[in-house]
Length: 294
Image (cartoon, rainbow, N blue to C red; front, side, top):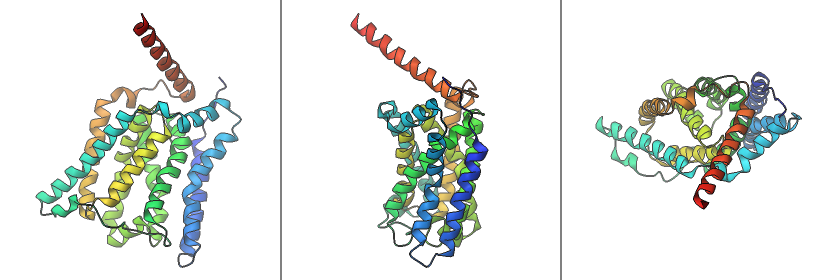
């Protein structure tokens, strides 16, 4: 297998320059019909950069790995995704329950009638769908692996969580975005969002790696989380409590998956390590089938 050298610095510099460039244009043209097109262009830059990077790499292993992560549905582990969804649902329930204990409203357990934001008149549901799908194509298509190639998944989760938080920064300036609404409420809510991305990425990494580095798995989970965040009637104050529970869940997940988060066998050879895992999985299936036949 031909060795591929991941270039995370180049990827993130290009991604940030293009995304922030388009989002700055969206801010300049915030009162015109150009707002949403510029927002969308900024959103697709991680995915666009990932696809171009992979497809122009000249490396067959990298291209095959990208296609596998996106199209090989049988690599996804439904039970693991459902478990991750249940974990996040428990986080939301515990957050609201704690809020109620301190005087919060029980109505937070209900669904909202509408979404909390709209960009240029575009449906928030469509925005959530696009964000969940396109972001994962970029981050899990190349960005996370580019960091994971050189670090354990534990350290990678911290590094990528910080990068992901910074990537959102221009959104706090653009009217109509969810992030702009947080800024209007106060700096505490902005900081809460930025801080929460780090422990949350441990959960995302868990979903990603446990599903054989499947982008489909993280797309499904990301979409579920975004919809939960919008359709469950949690108050902004409860979402601060939620960050604490996300951290608790992340700690539990790391402690119960130490081998995954701290193994270093994949470092320097992520593609080769993944191929070995797939061959091992296939051998195990064949061995099991043979045993059943006998």
